[in-house]
Figure 1: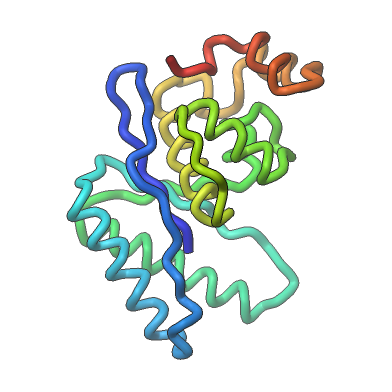
Figure 2: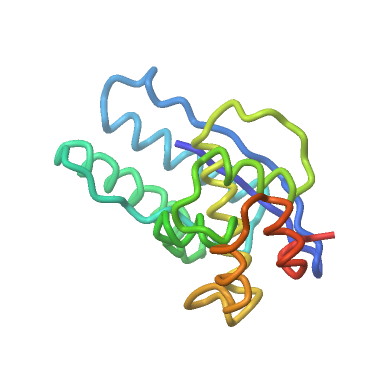
Amino acid sequence: MGYGLIAVNKSNVSLVEMGVLQLSKNKDHAERLEAIFNKMDSLIKLHMPVAVAIEAPFFGKNVQSMLKLGRAQGVAMAAAMMCGLQATEYAPRKIKQSVTGRGNATKEQVWVMLQHTLKFTEDIRFMDASDAVAVALCHHYQNRNPELKSELPTAAKKSAKKASSWDAFISANPERVQK
């Protein structure tokens, strides 16, 4: 399970912390759920966020995996609720669209945009952590700009289709660049 925290001060967005909770050491599913709850609880108490966002479940073919993922997400949401926070869910395509301008962007493209937007140079070690940071940034964009609540602004949608590179996308969408 990945997690990511960002700080928002006026128009400045920065990375606070990201990481991955290694659950493979716990063989029992109930122990894994307890580890998720405890990690969420400790992160919330340490950083005191004002919002929690979670990637909505995606539909796969393995029913057992879906059930386990749903339980894990439920435990994370319960931890947020126990601390007085509502957890907002975002679909994977919505997250990618908010961060990169393309709903079908690759994980690597999302990572590059995160590095550019949040101005950090760390190398990617865990995709789950970068996914979590992308969820946090998506939540910020959705709540910062009412136009983004339903979809990207028209100019960003058009340029996302026409952009042939990240440089082209950024130059066509200067309002998406955080300084």
